[in-house]
Length: 205
Image (cartoon, rainbow, N blue to C red; front, side, top):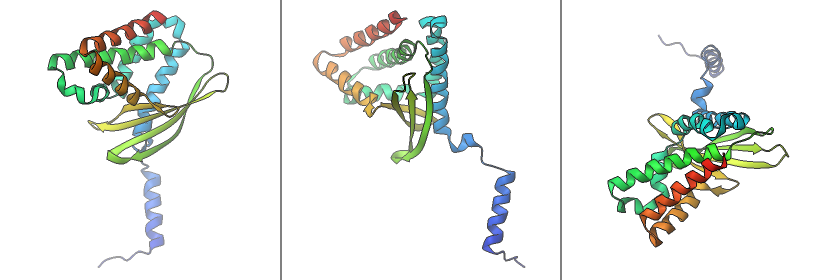
């Protein structure tokens, strides 16, 4: 014999089950958690920027960038159709150099703190199983900068593949810049440019 329950009773039972066994927030907002992890680390190196120095900031931010960004994918996208024209050795050198530049950029730019704060705005689903996490960065003078992150899943983890700052895609800028260098000057000048940018971030202290 089957027990027939009313819709109201079923809803009450489900609500009670959710009360006893709530869905963990981390599971509901894994993409946002990735972004929050990155931004909390950025604030950490900013607050101790002078004390840590460039090398100290680099040491702290590097593993977090590796964990929160899909750098191999980003590096391939930045060179677009030229990727397949590179030898395996060139691909490896470019990826490693691009990774170092990514770490250096965070360590070089976020070097001091005067009350800045990040805040989460929203998380939205996108096509191709991607997520858009929208955040704001408020400076001490009240100026607001929008940092929006596009993430995809790899090995059951949400990882950043693009950052859009005030509507400008960092990935798109790099793709145009790197593609132009590869088309006009070739591979060696591109690697040299990336290495120069790494030095410039380090010299900024």
